[in-house]
Length: 301
Image 1 (cartoon, rainbow, N blue to C red):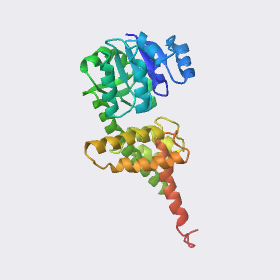
Image 2: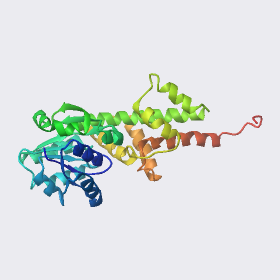
Image 3: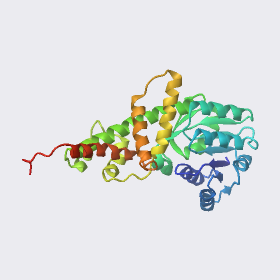
Image 4: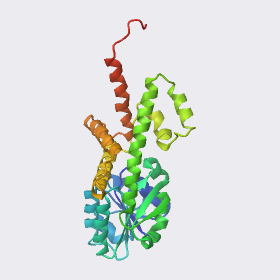
C-alpha cells in the first residue's frame, strides 16, 4: 500500500523510517522542507512538493503534526487530490471535535479518517512500539492495519470517530498525575538526604514502579531534561482535556489545572522545549527556597 507521511518532527520522522523498513513508505512532506529532504534521501521516498501532491499518489496518508489548526490545514490541502477510498490516519493529539470535523470533510470525498493518537514517546516512535488508540470505521482500520503495525505494537479500536482522541485525553491526564507524583516524591527524597540511586532501585521493584520513573528518574535527578515529550506540547494537550471536560459536564480536573499552572511557569522560564520531567525543576526549587527561608540553628555545626 502506497503510504505517505505528512509531518516529520520527532515522532513523524521515526514513523516514516519504520514504514520504509516495512516496505510501505512512498512519499513524504513536511512544512520545513529540509526535514523531508533528509528522509527522502535516506529512504528513496518521493519528496512531495505539497500535501496535495502527496495525496494524489498515496492510498494511505499518516499525519503527525502538533495542533488542531495544523490538522485542519493539512486536511484542506489534501482534499482536492485525495483518491476515493483513501484512508487518512491522524496520529496528532487534537480535540475529539476536530477529529469529527475533518472526518466529515473527508467523507465528502469518499475518503476515510481515523483518529489515531499514540502513546510511548519518542522512544516508542523510534522502536515502532507505540500504543495506538483509534477512532473511526473498523473497516477502514482493517484496510491499513499492516502499515500501522510498522508504527505501533498495540493497536486498539476504541469506537467511532473521536474515540481515539478521547482515550488519548485519558492518557494525558494520567501522565500529568504521574509526572506530578514522581517529580514531587524524588524532590522530597533528595531533600531528605537519601541516596537516590538506592531509592530508585527499591521503588522500581515495588508497587509504585511505573514507566515514567524507570525512564526519567535518573535523568531527572541528574538535571537532564532532553525532549521525549515537550512541556509545551503536554500543556497544549492538557488544555484540550480541560475543554473536553467542560463541554461534557463542567467537571473540574484539579491535576490538570495544577499541571497547566506549573508548565506555564516552566515555559515562561524558557523550558517549554524540555521534556515534561523538567517539572522536577519546580519541585526541587520548592525545597531549596524553604531551606533558604528557615533560620539556621547556631547549635548545628
